[in-house]
Length: 176
Image (tube, rainbow, N blue to C red; front, side, top):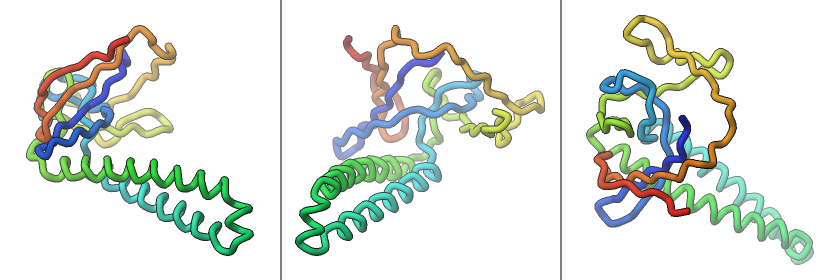
């Protein structure tokens, strides 16, 4: 069942970085499970995309600032772009911190059920919902079955506090 989960990494320099989870295969649980979302390739691609988006927004903001009349006419849009750039800067900082954690750690992503490091991330083909990058022990591919039951409001958000190696330091439940 879907449960809202947040992962908070406590770094050696005292920073706290929050991220979500990914779905993957845990070999110790022998099943489909929630794992840490700490794949360096995915994080690197996301960082590049955010930096490109920020550069485009900054170029647009500069283009709207040429000339006195342009500055007056486009004041609202420039303000919105500045706010968006600040959000992108925050997201880029989080992605850089996560990428640093992912590159420096020795273990792979851990299972959030048994804390084993023997996991494999899965990506499902959107057309037929089959994981082509993973083959089960029986020789078949995994297929995801979508649960269209809607949101489950009776779950409180759970936060796992982890160190940089993915070892659990504690759990927190959101107060309602």
